[in-house]
Image (cartoon, rainbow, N blue to C red):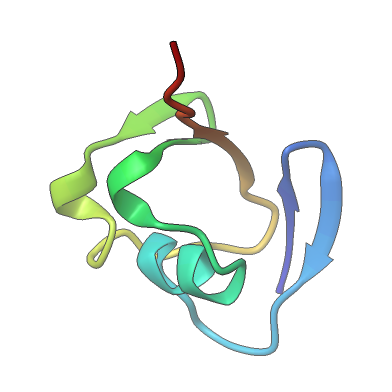
Length: 66
């Protein structure tokens, strides 16, 4: 399956959820906001939201600082 993540094409070998994608990208879900096809995915739905061929994913990582 082919998806676009933050403007870059990625090929996934099989079914995957948003949580699986974040794990594959080595990202900490607590500090992440995800938009799938222009809709925000609630953190509580990361493990249940399946990715589909052609999906466009935007990932925003919050960074603390002072």
